[in-house]
Amino acid sequence: MLRLRACGGTAPASVPALVRARLARRASSTACAASTVAAASSASSALEELAAERKGLAKVVLKKGKTQIFRDGSPMVYSGAVDRIIGRPPPKSGDVVLVADGTEKSIGWGLYNSVSMFCVRLMQLEEEARRDPTCALNMERLLEARISSAVDLRRSLGLPSANTNAYRLVNSEGDRLSGLIVDIFADVAVIASSAAWVEKYREEIQFLVSKVNGINHIKWRPSEDILKEEGLDISEQKTHASSRSTVKVMENGIVHLVSLEGQKTGFYADQRENRHFISLLSKDQRVLDICCYSGGFALHAAKGGADNVIGIDSSGSALDLANENITLNELNRGRISFVKGDATAFMKGAISKNELWDLVILDPPKLAPRKKVLQSASGMYRSLNALAMQVVKPGGLLMTCSCSGAMTQSGMFLKTIQGAASMAGKKVTVLRQAGAACDHPIDPAYPEGQYLSNYLLRVA
Image (cartoon, rainbow, N blue to C red; front, side, top):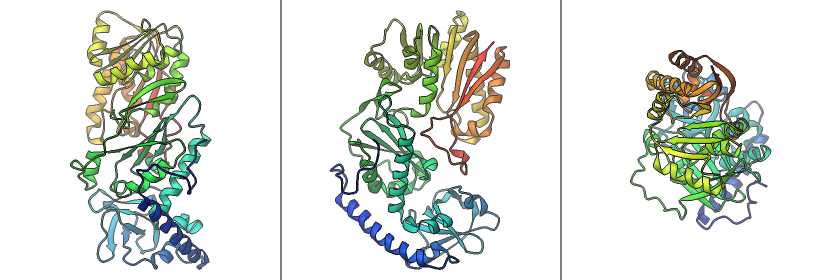
């Protein structure tokens, strides 16, 4: 059963005793303050009551007409929405601040950043603080509550299970911890940091994650480029060498060797449900997995009874994992193989030889990391999909994906697919539309968290 270890339980020796003591002191002081707030007049602001007890707490005042989106729950307060900051000395990056409307009435609190285009990441709204003030203005206590809630949610989704122990435990804004991602791979937790506040609270986060049942190792993976935009240069920071570079996990009953130094956190758990769906379609089929990375879709197709499976990727290290996965799953190498090569060149070669497959999966890397490159990325997606459609036998299936948030949020991906069909002289029908697996929740107040598009098409 997945849950946080009891507060009195043991944690890995790497977690400093100082962090444990700090969390305990914070919990005690917050409980006392919460009692005071609860007894206060219902007409007053819960956050203002608490803020009165803390010296030097700054207030970020929003421009008139810019408040509602944040009242509705969007966590990212961009600098253009801010009118002024009240407080001397001014807040430093990582400081807790109040966020207020144009009349200076508090609407919530968050963590300040003096450099980022997002000057505050909202952590709790006024109404929430009024209902339960125990976490108000207390980041350590809020972290404990949010991570515990994330654990409970995954448990309700059946994660981990006897067949799957690779999943996402914390999904940034979807779990209301913007900038923090935690992926669980068997007994290893990979923590991806993309916000200055996450680096500030690194020890507390590691301590709380280490209390999750079954976690024996933690791998910290900061996103250097994004953190530079947050005002942090961590390129010269010393990193503690991990005793492990790989870990074996299970997904849908299939064993995968995960590199803890690989892309992103090392494994794409977001495609788990889509990979399972491929296994249901693969019996007696010829299957082509383009941009296969470590072979996730290809392995599922083989386990699903495919006659023949080929995976293509340009990364030799990824294909080393894929080939190891063939062995781990005791698959017949006469029916599944991996080829190192460029996806475009491979498909053009297959077209020239009139090679066709019953089922093709196209899951390229992120081609549109930002909106400003969306137009050029659309052309690349269109060209790749046009080629993929030409290697699908008439009446066959194509599962095509985009992990570019800019593409998914623009709503242009389906239009791009249609453009690809016209380019290839094909007719496509949408059979299924999907996104990331259910352990990747999305906050509707922050639709920018939606990034994965997955379409199953019939190609004629």
